Image 1: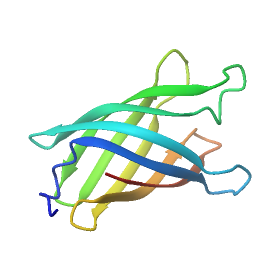
Image 2 (image 1 turned 30 degrees about the horizontal axis):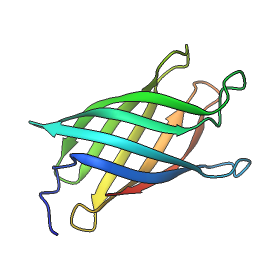
Image 3 (image 1 turned 90 degrees about the vertical axis):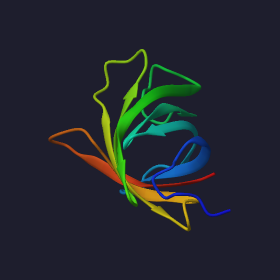
Length: 117
């Protein structure tokens, strides 16, 4: 089904990768809403970064979408971790979002992500 490219509402599942290749890819689920160019939502993922916390991490997403471009910050709940900056491109007639994420200045980590409806 073809959808308007800036309409990213719904449940998305995917994986993100660490660029340095030292960790396995991490599966996630995201619940997204978009209206008037703004995107928001939540995400649930396996914990791959906070050593004291076992299990899953949940986060909030806030950003914007324009045409096929999407930019957002991911902020973890219940932690003092800084937000993760993400930028993506909506592809395959709105069925997938692919992009990159960046975390931690000055010792920045980065990687890629992909999700689909």
